[in-house]
Length: 442
Image (cartoon, rainbow, N blue to C red; front, side):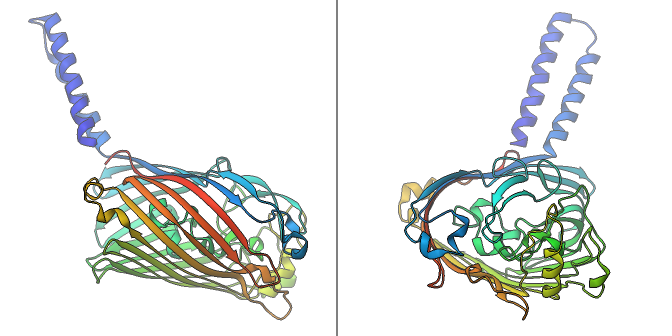
């Protein structure tokens, strides 16, 4: 694409110079030479520019109640009717530039659910209150904004607003990196997703390994909660990020076996002091957060298989719960109980049936039939003084299809169902979606 742009720029200037030369006949050609030099310089700059992005549109029909009482009074909502929803989960626009000498820049602006990052929601774990949620300050989410110095392939220093690569979905969150219409539900529930913070990253790639080490501000404990565990603690609802406490993240991926990637990632940092509200009663509380994950991706023999296991632990969860519930109503905290441990595990597999149809295979079209199962619980383990919300633990299955007419476009469809203990009603749904992911320049 960049070569085409370069060719067009030079061609247009050459035609223009030729026309002007015809008008001037034997005149001075200095102006044409300057114009050509400018064109070449502009084309060279364009060749260093990267434009791209990804996005999704979805429609879901849910065959269960959307009332907030569906967990606290499940029996009365067993035979509830269905309801539908349209959604734009993500629309992301990427701009990057190569300055040369190993220096480069990248940015991603993300619109979630078709608008800004403020919304009104009715919370099932807050007695059905209408809640005005602000996930981060500002009107849109700046998912990435960093400058990088590359010394070589194995050593790169990245500084700015970066993706935290903890968990499979945070590292591989493009629509063509998972089969379901929405991102894998378990990880997106208990971990920030996509998790991005302002920090410093050191990363590199060798033949069989990729590593990344990051220094970050810690999470904010007053936005932890029952349903989301630590997921609300990333970013900031203010015009700045509180960084009284810091954290570290690590990811390591291995590619030794052809077609197989195996990755591990971890995170550790304090969270309680990253709050605007202070209370000396809790001076010994640090809210240490520890996360460990394992994931894999296999592609071969016309199939793709992915799986993950995530575990998270919070120290002082009972104290954090008491503190959060004491915050004033205007606080961005959900003010709900916080568990000490959460877990998420899942596996999905898809088979490309177009691989057996010669003309479609040659045209590089793909059609995957897939299945997925996951289990997650944002209150897997609670301290003695915390009441476990049983509905936070659930299994989820999905079966469906992914059709890729071209590499950058995906049409998705699935039937899914959440499974609870017998006390709660299961939640089936049908979802259709279309997505794109790719670069407009190369």
